[in-house]
Amino acid sequence: MLALNPILRLGVMIAALLIGLSALSWAFPYDVNLSQAPLGLYIGLAALAAALWMWLPGKLKSAPATQNTLIWIFLIGLIARGAMFFSTPVLEDDSYRYLWDGAVTANAIDPYKYAPSDVTALPLFETDAAAPKPDEIATLEKLASEHPDVHSRINYPYVATIYPPITQAVFAAAHWIAPFNLNGWRAVLLGFDILAFGLLVKLLRAYNRKAEWSALYWWNPIVILQGFGAGHMDILVVPFLLATLLFAKQERFTWATLALAGAVGVKLWPALLFPFVLRPLLNQPVRFLGLGLLFTLACLALLAPQLVHAFNPDAGLNAYASEWRTHAFLFSILEDGVFRAAENAGSLARIAVAILVSGTVLYLAFRFADSTQRLPALFAISIATLLFLSPTGYPWYLIWIAPVLPFFPHPGLTTLTLFAPLYWLRFRLGDEALLHQWVIVPIAFGVPLALIAHSIFRKDQTYEIRHHYSRA
Image (cartoon, rainbow, N blue to C red):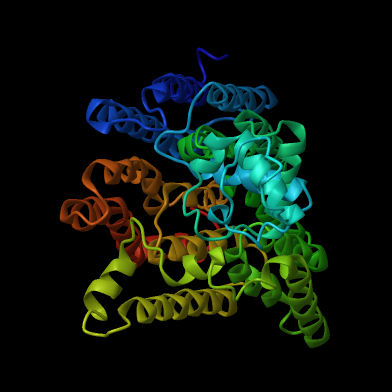
């Protein structure tokens, strides 16, 4: 069957490329000299894997649904993920922060209280003359001295962690399983991702979609390379988003509300999606207001440990919300163009983004979300709006939209994955280089955005935007 099924042939080729990228990753050690590293080859192979993946929607539309095919889809994706356990992160260092946060939380220390730079790695044994230190600082300095590579490689060490409490709990679980071990963290991610696959299959069937569409998530090169190769934590949010959609489809809105609150406890941005859960209850004011209150209280309870420190000058959330800008497209146009003459151009651009994203979500919710049938597409469009406008256009953010692409595989959205490998050029060119900011970034985001705009203005595509997935 493997030799005959065109879907599985594509999967085998994608997996083979990802296995090759896993091996090639060892040419990019932490302190790599990029002038001597095969960056072009790595980008080219990643783009080729994405190009093959983009063929999947066409094949999936006509392929017959069989249980054996679904099993092979799962196994091929599992093998590709397994290959990443033998890789090293390519030009990424977020995993060091995860391992450190996990150790801090596992030692019952508030991860939002101290920035990594508050701690210096000291000898394992202090002399009798050493000044006594608070127990928490002493514990952290011991951790830093025992694992200096992890501590010294944490990015943005001068700010406390940005990651919400549920994520911190998962970091701690990974630390208990395998302290300061990237593969231990990957194993935890794999557990979450297998759960996501099961939920996705169930959700596809609830929407009368073939379960084979799960391949569009399970073989997504971004999910595998950025989620398991680089070890980015964004995979943790996927099961919560899928559970939200599944409960909403079943009209179990209380559980959908709690699932989405759980997503907020992993990453803050899913709070934007709550209007879609609430909209079908607009004609039931008591339930509408009750679920709004439940969501607010659940989010406050889950985020309380982080919110206590929200106004600290070195809080990671403050730094991210007010300062960070990387690989941004429309945000750069706002900051460097529209608001360029203003003294606080960055702040104005962020306010404009907040208004545009929230306005888009509210319009879509109250115009199209009167039933749950269109929810996956509305999630996709809203997340895409956030991605296009965000001050940080990291490729691993595409993991957020990956689980809803099987329902809404618009070329403008899938093309984001094709151009995502261009992100790595920033390490060769520099973030501030004109070639990167005004050529590479506009290609990576402008081409997908142009495809979306083209479909909106074509009358024969209006149906596909308004309904929960394409006619095929």
